[in-house]
Image 1 (cartoon, rainbow, N blue to C red):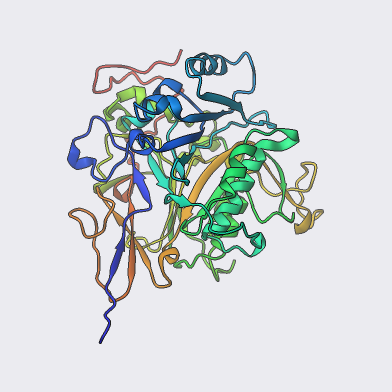
Image 2: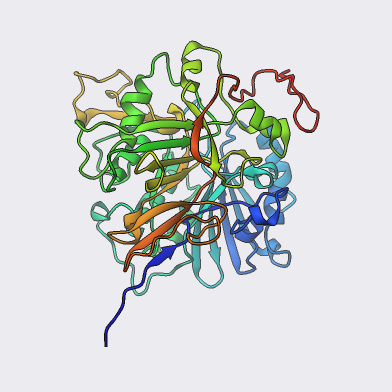
Length: 487
């Protein structure tokens, strides 16, 4: 008997969230919070985020069982008098099954910005959900957001085997598990036991079906030569990308909802952040780096968005200094290949490396909570104690300072097969669907779809366009007749 190998198309590992005020044809394959939490078998939920609406969160659980779900909310409001903390406690007091946990926040300018849910079910399965939305109504209705979900993970068979954590391959379930547990352990610094219960439970689960590398940040000073197998911030990206095959004539597109002040010069952006993202398997420093483009909405796009100026409150940058103006001179918008998200203001954060300028192939894609900032990704490597260690500190002595909690998932084609390819898809999660992108049948080859949150190709701002700046007055009315004034 002759066996034939058929082509295979893999649905997008990233899912877009449903937009309330868009028609059904623009919401194909999307997910809602109720899709994620409405399973009546869910027994426990750990919810990590920056902003929280407990009433909204609880409304997403199954109506008949929500009072039985053990809900743990992890937040970053460490000041007892913080109005957000006070409101959170007032809301949680209405639900006997909700427990609040304040994250360990050692950095003054850091935030608890990670967006993740860990779900446990009564059938002894677990799921990790990493996404981009705050746990508030506005973020889950009319703003562009995305979600990565692990499969439902079973319990490990037989006695737990201690794996060699230093040999776990980037992108494998074993490495993902190691890094996730190390991330959770960061909450338990200095004798705390915030996440100890969920750590002990997750250790029993089999992560082997997970495809993706966890890219996370935790606050503190982290040595680049310590014995931990887990790196944080830009160092985590640098470590993971060493195993990822990439094309040479590449372009990296960064879509974020906030751009911080990155310093008086572009040294950090060029020599630390961009350099970390430019790596790949076999890439040498002598090779030309990929070009970088930043996708950021214009003021006019915010005016025309479904929520008008109201959506602009979640999108932040400044133009108060020459360096901030320079940062935005390379911003882009998108057009032509329609993602169906033009009117849904972006709160999503994606970092995507295209294998060529025509965006026909994708080398890797990162979905994350991290915006473009040193607080999220980490300062440049320095000598211990904070002094910049150029010639005085050896590479073994260097450390990275991070201020915030962030979390994301990096995927690339090879995770689905040695010769696999990844291609953009529009308005659907599947290649070959109408508007879904071309699926070229090659015998035995795997093609992975990547659902695009923006349209292609990217177009630079024209002379009449300006970026959205929430700290500036916008007197031109939005489509609902409202103006934006900063008090």
